[in-house]
Length: 221
Image (cartoon, rainbow, N blue to C red; front, top):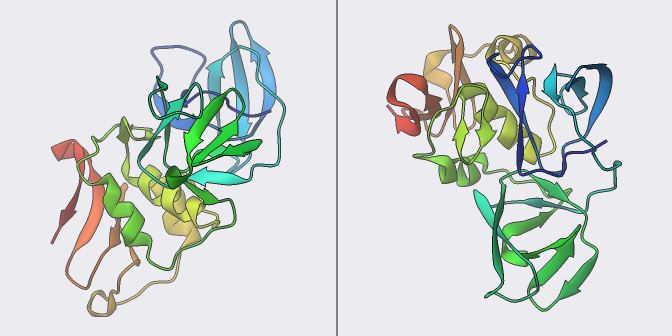
């Protein structure tokens, strides 16, 4: 099945007070493992990450055609810029375009401006061009959304956007990307790890990361 919500919190346990370990974005697909009361244990198809979400009906999978390329994309009830609705989609969300009318594309029950979209197989060599859009987005543990993001979520989001696999947590990312380089040889787009944390190099001397102590995403030297 797939998510048809802008964002769904995925919890460590089947309890609303439990830790949020990750999030599902619009178009993310997952498998239901088991039902526990008002909760479902799921496994995310993108990274095999497991957790609990609140039980409700979800639509079947579909072949998505496009993905969101802006930090947050406004949705419309009709193909008209005056018909905005409150719902927005976050960077990396995926949709199946059903119809086109002028600059607007229809998917599910909504319309979206084509400027917010790239084709599903789009890739870029300049990850920083996209990742810098998240500068000043607030830090949120378990987050992958424009309302809040964590360090490993930021890295996964942008590698997934480039159609590359990436584990969800920093401890698993460091095992997966295990090619070590000397500090003096760091180049743009290299990943930098320290205990429980990950950042991405934007140059030889600067990095960008979702930084908990300052509660936001920022560039640091």
